Length: 472
Image (tube, rainbow, N blue to C red; front, side, top):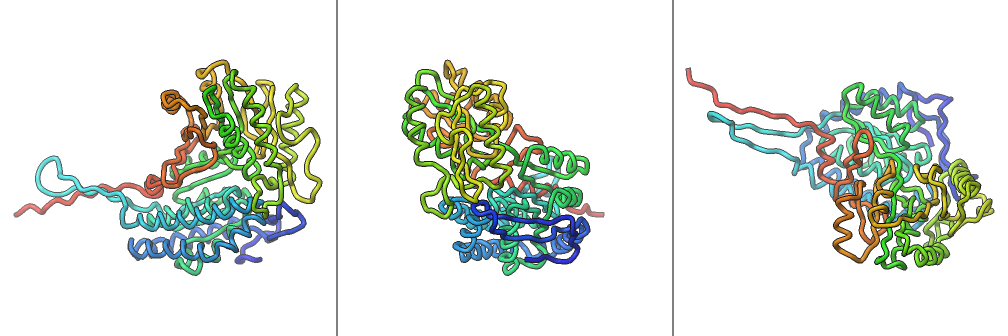
């Protein structure tokens, strides 16, 4: 597969099938900075016309995008499974979500926030209107190759911006196929894809009028600094180190099932994956046994299987990081409570490793302070509810907390005390509703995506005074 001219030979993008690394989906030269510059220039020219067509036309176009993705549902599901190893059921769910996102934001162009006020003195009107920022630079991760570009691009386009998407190299085939499908239903240059590595992302950040980023903390922090130096609005979605808190009155079997699935699902590679399990001491014996049982059915397997929960990790390097983290914890005195034993992984061509739950991990070990992108988590004890809350709040990248309890008063208390952007009671940490806010307060460039407030990020407010002329 090729893209337009302006390519550079030292920026090769290769995407492998993580289930069968010898299966190369795509190999191409990435964009050069000059190509990205021209793409942003085309987007800027297209933005004027895209805004001028009006709210009804933009709404209709976004509805057509949803229809086009739905029509390609089976093809795109297969592409998700093949390129990023997403289990079949999750791939289908991602496509369904992507379609719903486009249709949801298709309703909003004609419902943009605005207000009319009476002047404080004299006749006339005061109006507030929202105006698109221009060209949105969207840097997306590989975890959700179709849903992530959708929940960034759909509100940006609905508000009247145009977008240039820089996908993660591991998800390049998905991004280019998405662009091909959208090319048939959107005007030229309204949505463009710029494949490549870090240099391409940096160029896009240096040119766009508004930036939305998803990826690693190190890169995300650099993106925030670069955008801030230009006075450009920026939001980031970075790592996750989410905790599940289990209290003595919890339904232990249900809690263990939810927690194990949130550790193993998509090979532990979501930002909402459970990385820490914190149990009040008295419930530990029952919880340990329940977790062992829950992990029995979650071994890594071919993501094409209908019963697959944990497929391969995205790369050999990712698998090596999980193995290194596990082995260094074991060398420090930890032990495997459930999942993959020391040194073992599936002897297949793919990058598979079974989910791992470790106990007695030393407090200063990295697994207690930073999430590893893979199916590995730590079980620890707390003497009381208060101590469990403090432990859950200690995570640098706490995105979601789950609390397992049968007491409503305790649940309501925890909701106010847990310092994460989402709190899920008697539910796994994984799972985000795009209709509701997802505001990450611990990150630079706070992200607030997946609800109507996203429209505000992609627009700026204008206040207009309409006053009558005075008679001569």
